[in-house]
Length: 419
Ligand code: AMP
Image 1 (cartoon, helix red, strand yellow):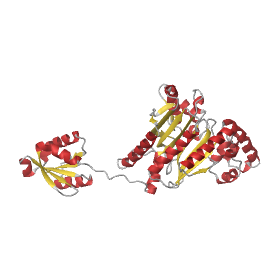
Image 2 (tube, helix red, strand yellow):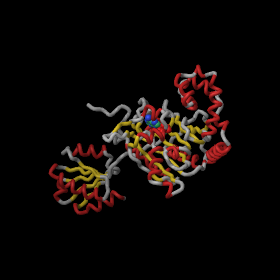
Image 3 (tube, rainbow, N blue to C red):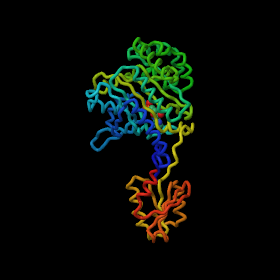
Image 4 (cartoon, rainbow, N blue to C red):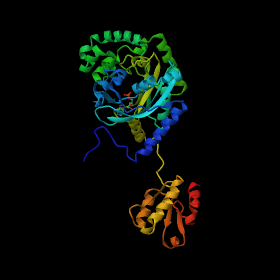
């Protein structure tokens, strides 16, 4: 039997209510900050991600699902959304219509990572991008929205981490300092980190190797060497977070090793999801739009992993969804009434009521069992002597009260079910 591809999973009907609850929460919070939804295609030209994420990242280097189509174009299933959103922003000149464009999305993403708890090859993200302003208040807005969504889902065990990367010039100066600090410790670093020492020294902070962590812990910190503007912006972020009563930590290890990331970076971690603790991450990317061929345009954003958030919610039992139920289940006493039952069900369904009946010619007992399984609020019995008299029997399942209804008085059922 063919199974789902490793690292992918089905979202079954029993999972859907929790997904819907999350999706509604996400939409409500983004709407309250006036973000508009954008949907982009599942695949893009590979070059977009190579340029928009960076050749030297793990995503582009080893995780992309890329393929060549029949016209020899290299395409890639999107591994993240920012590059795709910026592509759409530029292609449709969204910035010409509005100086500040605030967008949100929810979409599947694809990365060929090693599958483990909280890490999939097809997963889903929601996120936001605000394109067109340098205001640090927008950086705060990203944290605020992410935090508000996670809180609204009832999550408690959260840690907000922030850092500032400064401008590219600040970072270049800092890299020199870091190089000086690591020069005589280089040989003690892991092989990966020794390579990063030459290619992209900031990424040594991403190393998960404990001995690397020990060395880097005492390194000079980028936040202590910021330029004036980045420093001032970082102060605004800290002040505002305090005003919004969002607790945070400064984490100097939160670096993004790419040149177009600037100033604020942040991550929100959960203590309830095992090894993969990050629920979301984001920050300012003031130079990305130029990298993708646009005019210099300042921007900030974040992305959050839905599967991981739902896992945290499950582990914390942070919210419950209402038990699924239907309005009315039609039970027929004998099989020849099937088409009449279907006709009545049709009338009720036209009124947008949630209605079902038996299609398997099951016994009355089995039909009742089904009605209970579906948590039917009412059961409508059709058949027997009553049927001969033109009557049906409507039973309220919560109090057992029964009432006879004439065939042509379906309206009575409708108003009852609505009340
Ligand atoms: P990133 O786009 O790498 O900054 O990731 C943002 C968020 O997406 C992370 O904090 C995770 O919650 C989620 N995420 C990233 N990669 C995966 C994956 N392979 N499987 C599940 N969730 C992921």
